[in-house]
Image (tube, rainbow, N blue to C red; front, side):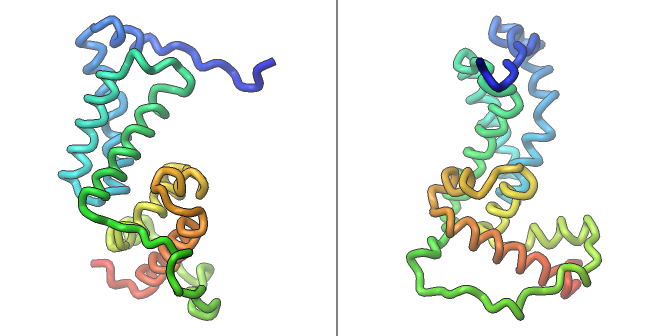
Length: 185
């Protein structure tokens, strides 16, 4: 007995598979904004996010016959967008430092900002996330905004789970510090 409910065939996707050009445009309109935002949170550059979006849709449309409803079309497309966004960062030579290969220790507890004292505002958080170094922003975005767990992020970025965990903790600390300082204008 299968434990998961089968994913229903998407009529719009099926029409695209049959070559209906209007359906391609509809599918693009349906997902473009969400996929652009996903990429932008990772690459933090509008031009790069636009490039990723176009490349992702081009690849998805070319590979549509390989989509067999093992997930929703949106989830399948999102995976393409995330992978292309990570590749875009790699092209910019953004490196995540594997913490297990360094001599860096853990930051002392007393340096952590008190989260309960900080009044978070959405605009401040958005501005602060954009100020994070690329590696921190990528891990934080994939974890908090895209819903990937740390093991999945480690696999996507090809780093150890410990590196992801450390990058996430440091990103969170840096984010909270930026918000607490209030220098986001």
